[in-house]
Picture (cartoon, rainbow, N blue to C red):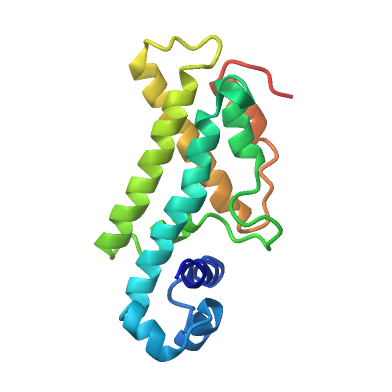
Length: 185
């Protein structure tokens, strides 16, 4: 089941929900039409399962990275988040699955909007926690940390979305450094 859901995630991530037809989805998942309908019922349910899988794997990895003090202080962990190529290295630029889902289906699909908002909030919460370990940032100034976490989350999601066009967004280190009161380059 995990392999099938991962296949669904990969094809939806690459092509988007609307452009993915059932034969492509079945092929990517490695399942027959009958098995697909028995397990998921329809394409939308498979899409929601793919979003849940992305949350467990990719967002889960990002949250774990941001919590891993063995990497260094909060600045080091946040920088590492921006430096990694994302879930599924070595593939053509495809942006961020969360961003893609927010834009394509979020405006008119409440289930997708709810799932993507929860993932974004989970990432923002992990960034907020990492900011508590950033030298020069007062860990007790929760209002400032909350605002910086929101800005960094949006910078991260924006950089991921822009990567779909092949934009490497080379200035992200300077932007992030300015937020963290640290010269990065």
